[in-house]
Every structure is written in structure tokens, then in C-alpha cells.
Image (cartoon, rainbow, N blue to C red; front, side, top):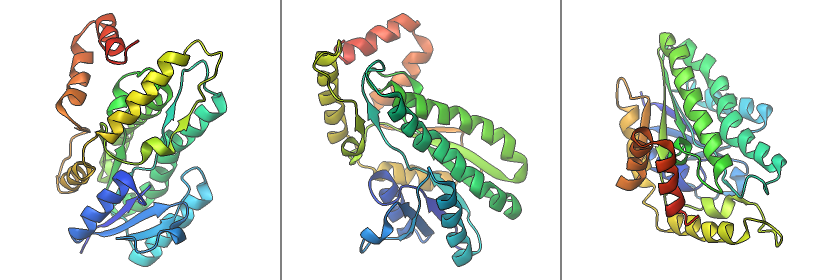
Length: 267
């Protein structure tokens, strides 16, 4: 029996690449979109889902269960970006990103856990970010949401192991997707103390995404996890320096690591 895969945020970018790759491997794949009717000729099934709306979550999960009778793998991929100096970024916009990247992922996981517990098997893969391992300048809120989801993953893994459920996460680096266009960008205020540095870093961020790797690498990693009996708790997918930056943070004194980041971001 083919496993049933549920991918939040499956209409574009990393989610679409994962869904398309798994469909080609013979899995039954359901992706999600806020407006699936607008996505014609999509390579796999799409259902309507807004991860910030509990009713929308329950309806989407119920639709999959009605059609398939089970749900084997959740890929918690839906997310949004945010940029800006902490001081200048509206707190309400920060909350919106936490609602999507952290609480949205938690609420979808909470909706599928009773199903997986009843099946006595299941796999939850939370898509986080290499940015979640460090507080990056002008991306601090995004880093915080992904870092929090990493820790939630660790806790959920221990809580659900005895039910036959595995919980893991995949942290991508920069990939060539449309995430930059979908971010909330704090405006560059004329009287801001961060005006010049923030503009410089916005240009750097967009360049990193444009020059990023092929999202198919994320799809291959998810496929590997699905086919691993006891998957690792943390996976990182990105170029050598992106992954090595996490190692450096572990071994270098804090202020030395901070100086490296400041040099990189021209601060």
C-alpha cells in the first residue's frame, strides 16, 4: 500500500518540489494551498488549507482521511519570511509569522497525531531552516520562529515515540524559490538608524535566494527520511558553508562567532 503524504504549503517552492518528487516515486500525495482552485494542472492533489485557521486544518485533514482512510507522513512545510530591524518591525507582523511558522505547524501536527496514534505509526517532518540555528541580523524574527520549531520537534519526538510515531526536522539553507517575494519586508524608514545597513542586507538576502540550490535536494532528503526506519532528529540541507556555520557556532566563542556573522553581513 502506498503511503499517504500530506504536505502543507505544497503549491510552490520546496513544498511543490517535494510533492512532485514523491508522486513520481509512487506515493499518494496531498499538498495544500490557501486557494487550490487557482492552481490548474498541478502535478499532485491540492486541498484548501490555512494553517492559522483551526477549522481549515480540521477540514483539510478530514478530506484526506475521507478519501484515503489513513495519513502516514506529515511534511510541515508551510511558512513565511520576514525581514527588518527588530526595533523597526511592527510587533503585529512578528506575531503573524509566529502564527504561521510555529503555531501553524504545531496545530497541523496536533490534528494528525490522533490519527497516527490510532494507526500505531506515522512520521512528522518539520521543515525549519539553517537560519533557525543562529540569530541573523535583519532576519531575527524568522530565525526565532524556526529555532523554536526545532526545539518543539525535539520535545514532540520524545513525547510521541512510544506510539510508533517518529518526529524529525529538515533545515534547508538558501534555495532558489519564490520565498523572497512572499516575505514581509519592514519598510526602510527614512529616519531609521538602520537604513543603510538594512538596505544592503536586503540586497544580500535576495541574492542568496536567487543563487540558491535546487529544491530537489530537499525532496531527495525527505524521500530518504521516509525510507529510513529510525530517522535522525535533525537534518540539514544546503551548501558546505551553510552547514559548517552551525558547527562553527558550537565550537567558537560567542563573540568571535558574532564577529564572523557581522563581517559576512557587512555590519
